[in-house]
Image 1 (tube, rainbow, N blue to C red):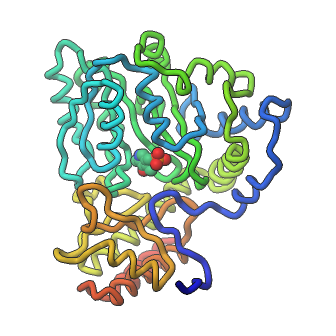
Image 2: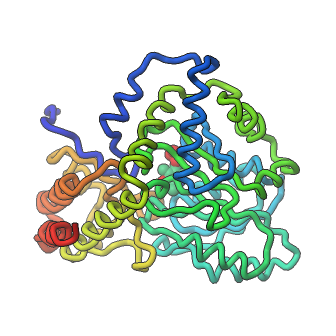
Image 3: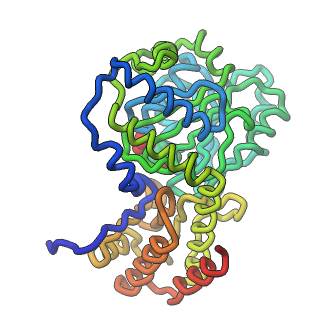
Length: 390
Ligand SMILES: *Cc1c(COP(=O)(O)O)cnc(C)c1O
């Protein structure tokens, strides 16, 4: 194997690129997590996270990947045999549903075509039909990372409200938080699940729950067993600046640095606008190539990644392999049902115009090298868009 020169392009939709500044912020001696300096770090990162989730409610931090925070949302609020309503938007919704089943919940999993988000009308219909209020929670993935489809959370909230149904509303924002506008309080979400390794520009290893007052109330009677994930000891310890067990101390330094970048220096609105612009440039390239965007509804296009369908008979994983070997760039694989048919371009996190240009060049040159039939020149269309829309 030859040793590649130059920088690797990590264009999978998470883990995303970690800014050098954030890497340097982690490069610190391990600190005493029960010492006096530590409390200040805890308070600062929790305050910043609340701004990112747009909430004044509780936010807890786990030393775990996103999957842990999925489980935590459920074990803190629900009881064995409870009914929950979920939608098959793609691979990640399917995985979260699997956890719910493993925990002994009864999942009403509404089938989907992996090309659309959650239909608010279907939410209203399901909840209206449940006149005994047996459904305890509606669980939705905000940005389905396997398909590049973003569900419209505020419309789903309105659909729930239109039925007067008391179900809890839980949303996975692992690949949207700090990339796509999200409002925990305003959209009446009860538990928001987040992770460190996508829009927050950190390595994997931290995950979050933002917890409404209604979810906290539900946690008092929830009968699913929980210990490591239990919110109560976490919230109690966090209030004093500490954790009930050893937190991922050096990742918290990284989190402090990324929050400073996102909140104090760039500002969330400009971060969202940047993601929108890069996503639009990418889609223009895809159309010019004569390829199909997996997401079918323009109102649901994802700003953090684009999933692209290859023509019938083409193997997307072979294309990804050619691009990795020739151009030293990693692209997202097709997950679950769309494996081999789809590849994904991540355009989230610490990313700029020239990184996008390099990414699209790598895709275009890779398709030539792999013999994929397409129209050349998508890059130029994307560059024109970037140049004309500053
Ligand atoms: C990445 C991702 C996850 C999985 O998180 P892990 O950190 O791998 O456990 C869950 N949901 C969505 C939407 C994701 O993008």
